[in-house]
Structure formats: C-alpha cells, structure tokens
Amino acid sequence: MSALTFGYAFARSSFMVMLTHRLRYLVGVFNYFIYASVHWYVWAAVFHEQTTVATWNLAAMQTYVCVNWIVRSTYFSNADSLLAARIRKGEITSDLLRPGSLLLQFYASAVGEMLFRGLFMGLPVGIAVALAYGLQGPADALSAAAFLVSVILAFHLFFALNFITGLAAVLVENLQGFLWAKFLLLQFLSGQLLPLEFFPPWARTFMEWSPFPGIAYTPMALYLGRIPHERIAAELAFQAAWTAVLLACCQFGWMGVRRRLSALGG
Image (cartoon, rainbow, N blue to C red):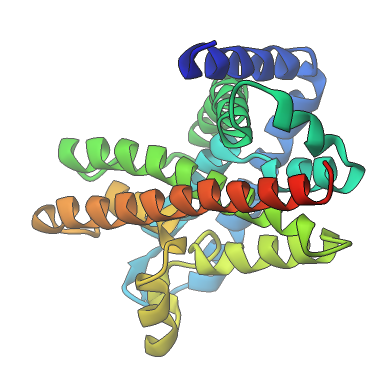
C-alpha cells in the first residue's frame, strides 16, 4: 500500500467518523459562537472610551479574537490525548504492524478532521459571528492570500505540537495534567487570547522567535495587514521553517518511541 493510499484511507475514515457525530459538532458550533461573543463584549468593555490600546483599535481587536476562534474551530484536534491514550493502554504496539507510519496515520486523520470541522464548524461559526457582529475583512488581496497560507501552516504547527506532546506519554505515567498545562500555555504563547503587542518586550522577543505565534498571531496579523507587504514572505518562511522542524521532531520522536517499544517486547 502506498503512503498516499494509506493516508487517504485514514483521512476519509476520520471524516466519516466525524460525520456520524453530527450533534456533537452542532453543540460545538454553539460553543465557539459563545467563545467569540464573550471575547467580543470583553474587549468592548476593556476599550470603553479609549481609542487604542497597545496600538490596537476596538474593531481590529474584536476581529482578531473572533476570527481566531473561527480558525481554531477548524484546525483544532485532540491528537495529543488520543496518542497518549493509545500508548497508556498498550494499543500503540498494533501500529508497529501497519504498513504506514504512526505519524502518517495521525496526520491523515487530523487532515480528515480539519476538512470536516472546516465545513461543519468553522464555516457556520464564521457566518453566525459575521451576521451577529460584523467583522473586518482582510486588509487587501495579498494579505488574504497570505492569511490562507498561514492558516494551513498553523494547522501543521498545531498538529506537530500535539503529536510531540502525545509521545511524551511514554515517559510520563499520567499525562493529563501536562496536557492541561500545555493547553493553557498555548492560549497565551500563540497569541490566541492576546496579541503579542500586549506582552512586555522580553516576553514578546521570546515569543517572536518561537513557533507558537505561528498558530494564532501570525495568521491574524497577516489578515489585518499589520505585517507590511515586504515582510510577508519572510514571515511565512519563518512559519514554514518551524513547521518543518517540528514535523521532523515528530518523525524522530516516533522512531525513538518505536525502538523503545520494540526493546520492551512490544
């Protein structure tokens, strides 16, 4: 079986599994709409009569948080907890017998889930939020195109970080607390809750050189035109470089886990 056929089979299977749980995703649409709504009114209260806060105006800030939640509803996945559960239960040993790698299996499943979530969560949430509140559109055509490329890279970054976290279950008996801590830290380090301009200079410098802003801040900065046209290519290249590094870490991490399982008789 070729890698393409193997990947397609898992992507299709993931999409069909999601399709059988439609009610769950109807509830998800409502939840993400609530998340966006809460942040919309929170920032309205924060700005109150102020024109700008940390170089952001109210309309841009509300668009930033709302579109961020819409995008997140599309690429979010639980690859970390699913992988950790397979390792903890010993089910991971069966993956050693499959013709394709575990990384390809989880990646293809994440792609299938993303396609489903984009159609049945991201799109409905986006329409609902736009109708309820109105949102700023992309700054221009180039910013819109760069935003779409950046979102695709953001999906890969998010997947890679989740996969690496899930592999840590080999070393940690109970990963639940670690998963929760990662979830909370990622909210801030990625710029999901606050743009980088709201952080002190030392924290912002660290974040700008890390892969985390590529998950949320970079796509939205491109969308709103806060990154000049002459810097767009460099920003996307930086995001792509971190994506390649983290995906390579996923591959090497899985190879290490596989050797460990084989040595233990898995």
